[in-house]
Amino acid sequence: MCPGARRTLVGMDTTRRNDPTTPASGLLAGKVAFVTGAGRGIGAAAARLFAREGALVLLAARSEDQLVAVVKEIRAAGGTADHVRCDLSDPADVRAAVDHAVTLHGRLDVAFNNGATDVTPGPMDGVDEAEFDHVYAVNLRGAWAAMVAEVAAIRATSGTGAIVNNTSVGGLRANPTLPAYGATKRAVNSLTESAAATYGPEGIRVNAVAPGTTLTEMMRTWDDRAPGVIDHLNSRTPLGRAADPEEIAQAAAWLLSDRASYVTGTVLPVDGGMHVV
Image: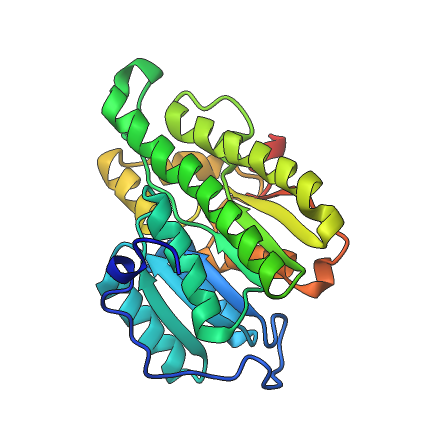
């Protein structure tokens, strides 16, 4: 286990274990899955979905209360889940969390790097250096640290596997309202493509989903600060509405599954068509 693991794993609930070789049904049947930002929003929806699809899921985030609630919900529904506290801005925390998936289940098969932080909406000159450094540390360096640790874990255990990064349609074009956020997400798209090219020969696929307007706590908070934001974004979306978090999770689940076995290096917009307008 990596340095910092003892600190990271405080509060870990280890009362339930399943044999990862136990037959199961579903899109991710029997796979060991690691999900960051899993306490709420898209990450929580993904953890619930992956468990329903047969995965053994390790949820990671900073807020233990949220993680505990989601794990209890998954277990009550008959799924297998555990949690670990993890600060994406701390590479040692990230490595320890990924390592713990292997400690729990003997391997890592798939990972969904969903965790991120937001930034105060406004023009580029309205973002101070401290805020820029924080969004960079979580959204970009955190994703990089997670991918590096996940590739190492997959390579050492399962041998082959899949990783999906959660980016944003706002990273596919100019983003004057969220310039620092959009820049980090575009950079993760580049990391996704580079990782796909690097690790594809080993049988490790790396893709990304780029959500559009999604009804997460982050989006609702933005709408509270600037009423009408969601309606405005919906007016620019051909499908005319925002996504439910599970709709994004469904795309990630497919990309992680064996049904997407010939898909790698793709940044998949899941945005109701916003990127084409």
